[in-house]
Image (cartoon, rainbow over all chains, first blue to last red; front, side, top):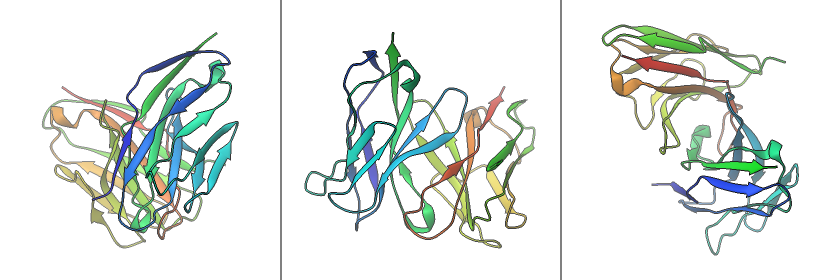
Amino acid sequence: GDSVTQMEGPVTLSEEAFLTINCTYTATGYPSLFWYVQYPGEGLQLLLKATKADDKGSNKGFEATYRKETTSFHLEKGSVQVSDSAVYFCALGGNAGKSTFGDGTTLTVKP
Amino acid sequence: NAGVTQTPKFQVLKTGQSMTLQCAQDMNHNSMYWYRQDPGMGLRLIYYSASEGTTDKGEVPNGYNVSRLNKREFSLRLESAAPSQTSVYFCASSEGGNNEKLFFGSGTQLSVL
C-alpha cells in the first residue's frame, strides 16, 4: 500500500539557517503530494501542494518539488525564522481524500 | 470563518466509560474524516465519510463508531474507552474526490485512565 517516510526529528536550527526535511513515498498511480504544518496546540494546515511530476509547490518561503524518478518531495526553506517552529507532515493524496501521512518532523528554530 | 470545529478540546475518561466527539464543518464539504495522532506514528485514519449517508472504516477502526448526522456533522463515539485510546483526535473535511487537500479542526486531547 501507499506509504510516506519522513526524515526523523527533532531538527534544531539557528535562525536564518537553511532547512531541508526529507520525504520519500511509495504509491500506486500518481498521487498529489502535500506538506502540512502543525503549530503548537493547533490542527494541521496545508503548507503547499504539488499535483504532478516536476511540479514545485511553494508558500511562505517554503518549497518542495515532486520528483517522480526519486519518489521524493523534500521540503526546503532558505532562511528559517523562530516562527517556523512547528511539526511538519508530508502526505500523499488518496482516493476519496484519504491521505496517507508521514510520522511528522519537529522543527525548532532558535534565535 | 469557522472552518472545522471540534468539541470538546480536552477530555479525561475512566476505562469503560463512553463518550462522543463532535465535529462540524461550514465549508459545504462532501467528505469528512477522523484521525488519531500518536507520538512517532503520524496520523492514522479511523473512519471516514466520503459523502452524506456513507461511512467506511479506515486503518484503525476497532473500538470506535461514527455517525454522519448530516452534511455538516460527523461524530466519533467510543463505546467503552480503553487506555490504548489515549490520543489526540482530529476531524478533517475535504471537497471530496481524489487527491483533495484536507482542512483540520484543532483537535481533542483524550486521556483514558
